[in-house]
Image (cartoon, rainbow, N blue to C red; front, side):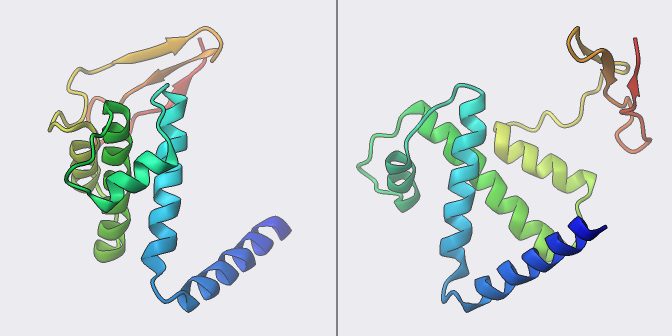
Length: 143
């Protein structure tokens, strides 16, 4: 409980500092690009900060690599998510599908095949995607 209280206090301090920044979008965009870059690197999609900043400036003559375009799509989806959750004050299935469309570049939506099973021996459990995204599911089962 003490850790939660300290975390809450730290978030409040960051919020207070963020309000002092003349253009908070500068901080948010930098964090978004860092998150997009680092998360994409996990999937072996590697780009540099320089390439991302050039892409962010949207220079018409900039030749962007496929990796940079992929990371920028991730960053755009993250920014869109942030703005929409802030505006709507809710994260629902429709918004999740909109975010997925921006991220992946298609409108595939939720998995339609019931009982899709993802498993890996090191997990020691089976992960089931819900057959109905509105009706629960997603519980872990021990093998």
